Image 1 (cartoon, rainbow, N blue to C red):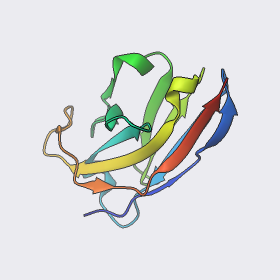
Image 2 (cartoon, rainbow, N blue to C red):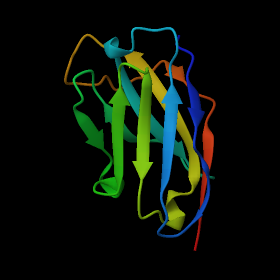
Image 3 (cartoon, one colour):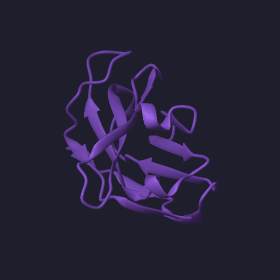
Image 4 (tube, helix red, strand yellow):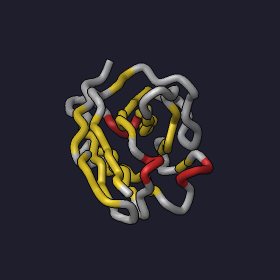
Length: 123
């Protein structure tokens, strides 16, 4: 498994922005597919966004054109820029990783997880 360290959560008002970061030290980062998941109180965890080895991205419909996932292979980091935040975006956000043999496709199952960071959006 991979150590993942998240940062950047916090509290913002509706319409605000936050940038989450996730560091993955000590691995060959370019071999990994990275994802961001979230879990709101009383709800199941859902995948928000993923980025494949070649930078191909995928988003859940509810955050398309609102969130942007990016990766920096030189710094072993993946970021999630969240704009126009809404109260329904309130959740604990988790970074996840899985080694992948594919360049443009992310597996559905991730096997390394960060500790989670709280994002709270007030109306």
